[in-house]
Length: 135
Image 1 (spheres, rainbow, N blue to C red):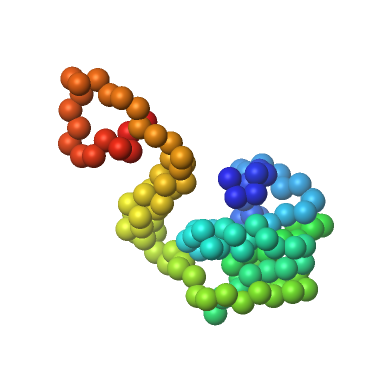
Image 2: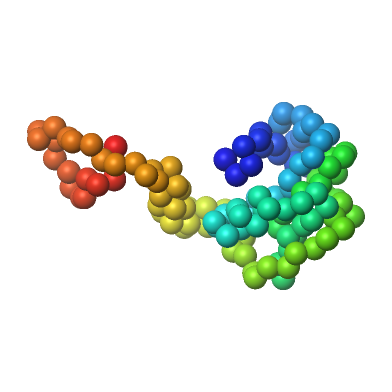
């Protein structure tokens, strides 16, 4: 959704065959532990080849081209320009996926339902909450 291109997984060598091969072309690497925000999506989509985004904890995302690096590579060598931004929220423990779930679903719902208008509903249907967000 962010770039309109396919997403691929870069992982440990023994797991990589489970995923589709990553084509050797221009690509964007994104740290999957970083929580997505509108501002971060904008910053990533505006990256030029050779640019990377970092916060005080390290690499967040970068646009590069050429051969795909190994999973445990230090990505610094792929980028010639570094953009520093404010600290970003990162997953540290698996339980945080569930703790952040409601917030993330509500945020995603706003994106997918933007400019949609609820239609008429059958009077035999009972709603326990507002029905403005039912399409």
